[in-house]
Length: 260
Image (cartoon, rainbow, N blue to C red; front, side):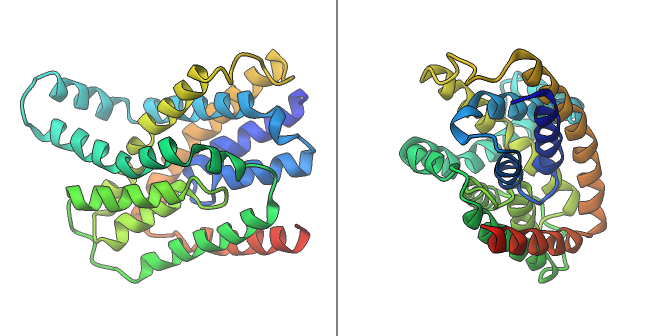
């Protein structure tokens, strides 16, 4: 992988992690177009995911600090309730990670047809948000669990994590700004946990032939584009303009299916 490929893939990861168009799907498409072999990109994928985690922390640092303050007050308050809901939302994806990890990893093999089909599923998620117009609820524990199921489905390349979780939250009638915030915060622990599992399994022992310079360029590109996309996405959810991304997913999905 050269520096230009790393730059392109880093930008793809940063933008598509937060925009509801599937970062995993676009990374698979990008690797296929650039000729990057799936087995040679694990370390790079982990690095750029780490960059988007960092961008999320930067955008929501005030909320995260407040959550930790409430947590270390050691009492049942608004912050500990919110953290508990995040933990509940993690249950489905933890189950998938523990019992179906090998199967999930097998999906990241450059299967462009699968990506195309799942992008159409993402489009369906996004269009479904127009069914429910009255979004006034606060996110409850059951809502958190159902949103967590949506996040679990998004381990399939082509299904957007933010698109699936935000759409599900809106369908449940939750407030738009609350859903966007919850969607971005709930992914922090699973991504960090997945990266730590890869470290524990020794999968990060080498660099898969990716040089240090491409890793640094990919990290910076994913971090900067992630910052911009995260803030942009919050405003998009508030304005309810998700159907534009549904149209985009349909177009890219069909192209991927045709050329698969």
